[in-house]
Structures are given as C-alpha cells and as structure tokens.
Image 1 (spheres, helix red, strand yellow):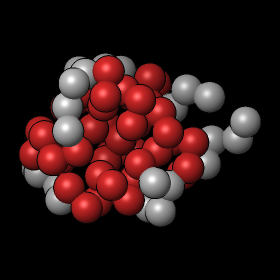
Image 2 (cartoon, one colour; image 1 turned 120 degrees about the vertical axis):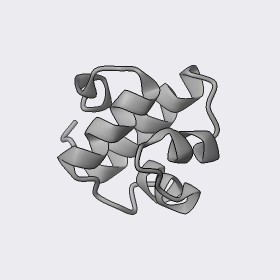
Image 3 (cartoon, rainbow, N blue to C red; image 1 turned 180 degrees about the vertical axis):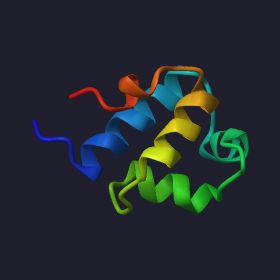
Length: 71
C-alpha cells in the first residue's frame, strides 16, 4: 500500500491509541503544541504532515519516526 496521508493517519491513530493518549493530549505533547483539530485532520488523512511534524509526533509518542511511516 502506498504511503499516503490517509495511511499515515491510520498508523498515527493506532500508535496514539496504543499509547493511551487522546488527540488533545498528543496535540499538547507535540512541542511546540499543535491543535487537536490538526491531529484530527492528520488522522483522517485530510492533511499531509511534514517530516518535521512527524518527528514531533513521534517524539511525543516516544516511538521512532519509522513507526509512523510503516506500511
């Protein structure tokens, strides 16, 4: 399956839930903080995250960035 914003969103949601975080908690933990609405858009595949954003989210989730890019 190609690495699309939708696929990244599916993986992001799975990893976030596995870590027991709400969208709001992840948004606050992604330093500097982002909005919960932005996290929602990422998970829905409505926004295409930059590598920098993926790095921030991976750090907030305490996982390697490659975990967010798995297919």
